[in-house]
Image (cartoon, helix red, strand yellow):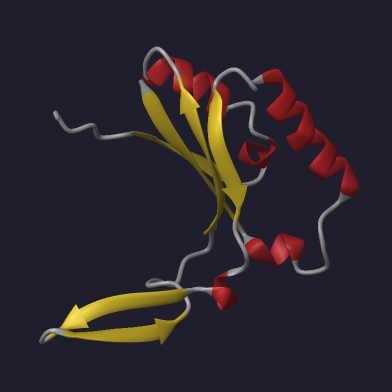
Length: 112
């Protein structure tokens, strides 16, 4: 079963760049869980984001995320795990869990 592990943190922590030791911890996490990780990426700050809504058949694009929050989506991993508990165990090892939160969400599959 696949799960998306969504990494939320206060992006102000990274306003001056990333701590090399933090990046090393992410590299170690990636190595340790390489068999489970099917994909993932870090995201650029929310200032680079846009939100798109369609109203009356016309797209409306606004700068930034759709909501003001204390924590922002900063990245994700797509992992293969036996169940939610196994995915949560992997999520608990993501370095960002020490400062922010990790949302564990099952991937929805549709019959063919």
